[in-house]
Length: 348
Image 1: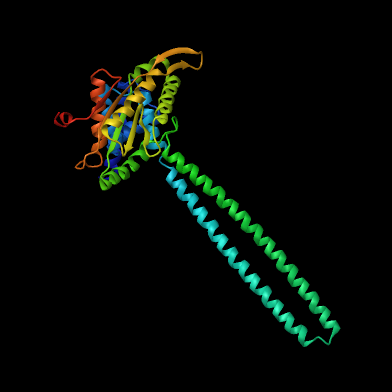
Image 2 (image 1 turned 180 degrees about the vertical axis):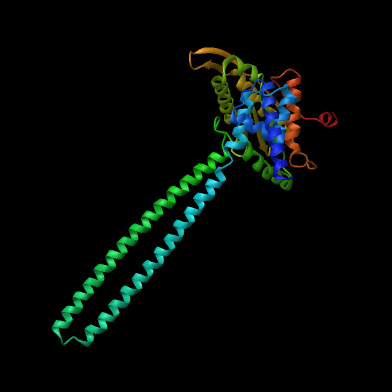
């Protein structure tokens, strides 16, 4: 495609983005524009899949959903570059330490050599008081200079070490941010998708059960529209807290996008996974939601759950799709319930 043709195509997509956002009564904010442009341009398959799934399940998308998609796919795109930058600085500081260490070693050897030479000179000229005095003074000067140089080197080494500690802390912080959802502090989808592959491989190799739970807050859009996004954020945090309380150390939990959460359970049978899902469902339903701004009761929240167990012949992405299909069945059959994936779903 020529540059002019590419420009025309970009302009056409841009115009279609504006029309689409207007038809959905969504303001053309830069972040929403960026998400929908990427969708229409088909430049990100995962993003388009999320949008299409939302439309298939609820018939439309809203500002809250587009904001969550933007956070998922765009706002966290740069930390790896920052990590690379800090890693380069750490390497530079490490090289500095190595150079300083070599200088320290050279100075020590030089000091030893100087003392040996002075000792030999003292033996040669021991009959000359004047020369002996000069030699002793020279030894003192050598010692003082060596001490001064070594003190400076110790300070330089200490400063370099402190810089490396700070850089390491920054790298750890950025790495944590790159895998964490900003609102709920749970793992984000990027981290979940990269880690679940490892869990699936381990389960197939070790022939141990692995289950996945996909959960969705019931009627979240209506709740969000009625009470506003700040209260919606409060609901997401409440659900995240309950989920966190019901996972073990080896489990993988994430906010998968919008109001959807995913939980992978290694070494867990389907029966036990259903129990975990139902425990979470009950725990969430028992939480009273209070508007923190005015202490007004906002009722209770319910969730729907889809559960599936990994099969040996399934590719990596099928486990999530199976659990998501079961979740759809749970919502279609009345919500606030747990549904397992079955062979019937595969035939549908």
